[in-house]
Structures are given as C-alpha cells and as structure tokens.
Image (cartoon, rainbow, N blue to C red; front, top):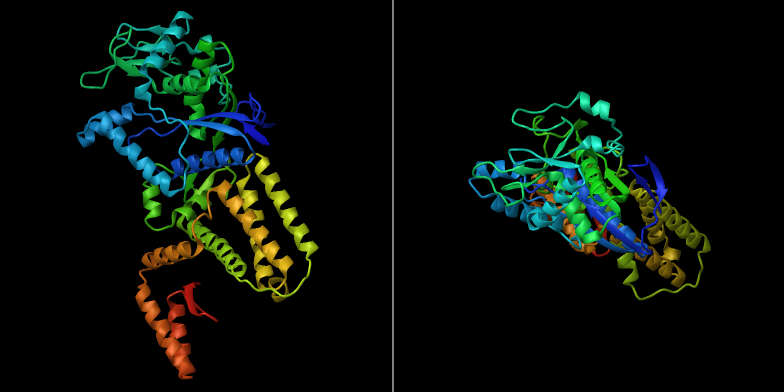
Length: 485
C-alpha cells in the first residue's frame, strides 16, 4: 500500500514499525461548537483508513483525542453561562451523536487533554532542561523555535518566511516572535492547574505530543488530520516532540484536503458555515458519508446541495442493486446448468482494480468508480433470464453480493437493510419536497382501480399527475411500486 507523506511530499510504501501492527493518532475536535462538514470529511477519511488497514489484516491501535480546554471553549462558556467543563461535555456528546449517525467507528483510545495535565507538565520540564523552552515572569512557558534547525519542513515553510509575518503581541514576553506557547498562565476566573510556573493550562500543541507518546510511544506510524493542521499545529507538535525525545516523532503524516461550499472556502464570516446537523436535516447520513468519499481525500471537495442530490441518486442505485440481488438469491428454483467464465473474469478484474485504487493512497474516488462497474454488471445479470435461471449464475450473484458487502464495510456504507433504507430515503425525499406520501399512495390506488376497470385514460391522467410530483410508478408482478424519478 502506498501512502502520501506530507513530510516527504511523495507517496511511499506503507511499512509499519512493527510487523502487521499500526499505531495511528488523529487530532480530534476542540469541543466548543457543533461539528461542521469539514469535521465530517476528516473523520470519515480516517475512519476509512482504519477500516481498510484492518481489512488488509493489520492490527490497528487508533487514538483520537478531544481538546476539552482552550480559549474557544472558555469564550463559549462565558457566552452560554456555563463552565468550560460543561461546554466540553455538551459538544463532545454532540460529536458522538453526529458521528454515530455517519457510521464512524469509535477510536480505541479517546483521551481528553484535561486528564493528561501531569504528562504535559513533565514534557515541558524536559524541554526546559534541554534548553528548548523558557518561562517568563508572568508564568507563561514558550518553545524556542530557532533551536530546531529543520522547523518548517513539515509545512514547507522557512524561518525567514515565517519571521516576516510574525510579531509579538502586547502582553507577550517572548524572546522571539516565532516562539509558541507550551504553558499559559491563567487569567482570573479561568480554569487552571498548578504547575512549577504557577497556575495555568497547557498550550494547544502540547496535548497531542504528550498523549500520543503515552499511548503509542515515539515514533509511531501515522499522524493524521485536516490540511489546516499541518501548520502550525502539527509543525509545532513535531518540533517539541523531537526536541524532547531526541528521535523521529512520526513516520507518515497524512492530511485531508479542505471542503469548499459552493466553490468558496467555508467560514462563518461568509455565512456558508454548514454543520453536519444542517445537512442531515435534509439528507440521509449514508448519502453524506458517500459524498465525502467521492473525491480523493487530499483533493479539495466542493460541497453543494446539487452534489448531494446527485450522490443521493447514486446511493439509491447501489442499494437498489443489492436489493435486487438479495431478491433473486431468495428464490429457490433454478433449472439450467450453464457457466459464465467471462463474467467471472470480469468480476475478478473489477475486484483487482478496486484493490489497486485503495492501495494507491486510499483512492476512494477511483474505487467508487469500480463499485459502479460492479453494480452495472450485477444489474445486467439480474435482467438476463438465462443467467437468473442458472445455478452458476446464482453463485455469481452471490459472489457479487459478498464483494459489495465487503467494500461497503471498508467504506462504511451500504450496511443498512435495503428495504428499510429505501423506505427511509423515500420518506426523507418526501419531507424535503413537501410531498405527502399518503396522497401518493391514494393516487396510486386510484390509478390501480382505474386500470382494473380498463379506464386507461384516467389511469394515464393519474400517472401524469404523479409524474409532475417527481414520482415514478413501476408496475410489477407484486403490484405497483413508486419512488422518486
């Protein structure tokens, strides 16, 4: 398997430090607000990476942290008249609600910053002893960036470039504008912990260095997060960790690309800040999850309602295919003995290409293309009478179904009972379109009654009325079915 390493700027064969074991750390949320679509993309990307590594037979230890103390949390606590702890608990609970709906697996270890103050203080003390950190009269502690010769190599920045955009803010006691906070002295009324430098709290970058070392050891295999974390967060993590421990921090740095909303960068100032809850009020979680995988994880992803509508139709097609396969396989009679070696070869070719796509830096976009190749093949088989009646054809349909189920487990989709999902999707689309499903059922019954009386003019009129609502009626041996066109 190849993985793109942000540090080396190239794809490299993934070779873990220990045979068949993977140690992976991904930065979690700062718990001060509801999760937005950018959080959804990052969480889904690394969820699929964990699923795929386990699919390949690796024993993965996955750590994802929660930042539960931060300036943003303190500000939100003041706004909502709550304690910082209450704010963090509220939004961590909301994170779980959102991610459970998206089918995100829980990490093996989910540490919180406030439970690891002792480890962070010890790390700062080591950095002080080695001359990489210094304290100020006010009780702040800073990291000496210029002591690290290779600072900036993860994000591709150099010291001169960084210096030109840096300045010391009023009240700061930095030796150098580039230095960053390891420990912050507390202000009146803020949460604080005792330390050798007085009451205060850790800097944001410190927690991930301390917690990853505690649970995974240094070095570990994969450190992940959004592209926006490469600088300064991950750059500073790497600097302080390698300074403290004197060795490589991480083998593979993996970052996912940004989400743009209607071709613009998402931000509250632009009024295009979209939470997961906003989206799931009008779309099924499986649709959002699948949409987030339709582009390569390192590429920018453009979000729009139109793209979600297109994805919804695609997800509907796959579920309908699985439903058709299950229906055919539930039948107990077949009569012909006929082999289909070309179909077997075609399936194997599609499987091989899917594996190659996923092995090539987790290229879910390409893999999804092969998923649709397989569903198109399955639909051809279901429509072929000779194929359906052959024992060999039945075995091939079973194989296709098993492959789709396996791919679904890796991608975290197509894992709902088909009939149940299609009904849920129909209900969601009715709400979104302000269509009363009872009215649709009533019109269909009227149409059926008209057809029974051979009043085909009325039947056609009712069908046209349904079509204007975007409803398609399918006449089947089991009776009329309807769905959105």
